[in-house]
Image (cartoon, rainbow, N blue to C red):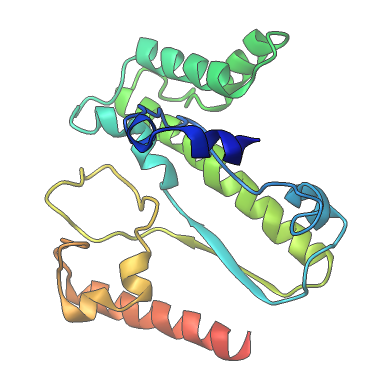
Length: 222
């Protein structure tokens, strides 16, 4: 039905649509068609319905940087009201059931507040970044790794902390989503390019050599 509907639409109507991407979750994913994807991927993994291969999987320290990028230029971090609003907006966008929302909001605020330094705006931004990193990347990645390990698949898990220095990256930012890529492909050995406009140092070159060794050794021998 959807395909037939699309075929009847003028192309201009399609290309002129203002599509708002999802803010806190992926807007599309696997279609459970009963054939190629016979069930929800998480259920399939829980049942061990996947091929038993070695897996190299991991996360970067600050994967969720894009979710706090509107505060990147503020040297003082974020205010308490902004912190509260962002968490409330996060909960409202992700959880459609009104029951329990207040408890969920307060629980998240409690868990991601540094109570030893609660009035520090920079620390608020750091813990907010940790929230988005945990929700979007760390939790699902750890769950995937555990499920593979439970079915005796060799699992190698890493956490990447380093990122190259750029003129646009604030000093407080950790390694964000994709920051490991230039090191995996040896970019520091070649030098800065449009895609990676970094100020690569000798340490970056050495780290890239180590990362490539780890990755290629995994590909060769697991």
